[in-house]
Length: 103
Image (cartoon, rainbow, N blue to C red):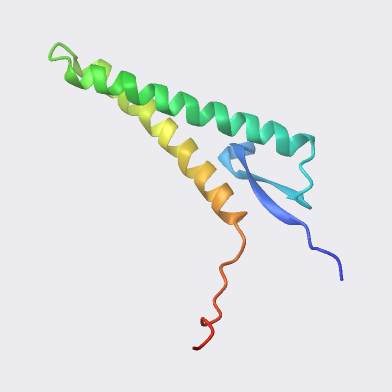
């Protein structure tokens, strides 16, 4: 009995913002490697954005336009991070639900 292909949520959207999936046998093909690289870039950009956010929020001269722009970028970064977490979480092995062996 062979392994069934797994569906991987990709870090980009398709037409009309719908999620894109890759059917994979977990072999690490080209599209999987590209998706891994994009996820890494997205998470890195999100971490960098947090630093900018902290600086802007500490600046008493920050105006409403700057804060709205920051909110939009943080929303995008959070959306990316949630998608990465969902994709990676779906690829984790199922936990062993068997009760522990007795004494």
